[in-house]
Image (cartoon, rainbow, N blue to C red; front, side, top):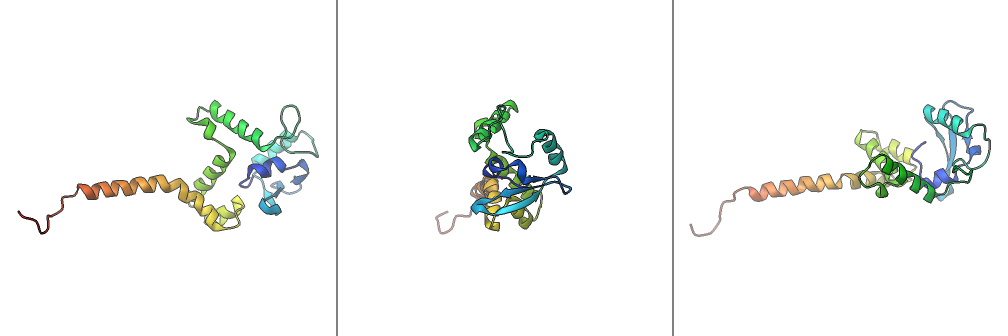
Length: 163
């Protein structure tokens, strides 16, 4: 899927998926009610076909009882998977953290900001850039602290004092 928000996933319906084109596409209702048609990866299309098992309508995401998932269900599932995966702080792993990681990873890999912005569905490039700025703030702060420490360790000539 193209940079989904949890709200977009839980409101998605089977009727929004189209297998008419290759790759398949899905209509997604973005923030502020705007709709977008997004292409899905071929592997996602294959998995959706299996998952839907012939269903042609209704909510896309269902629990084991056949009820629609809400955003809290998706958070719980994400955290359960993080625990099973042995992550250090599984309770801090949320779908938004995964989305932010994806955005940051794309920018770190050199993907053009405009493409990542479109992928994430952000109206403004500053929003997309802010993800990268926040993620790299710790590294930048550590580099500045190291630089300052090196400067403080350098011997300085004493000016105007008695010798």
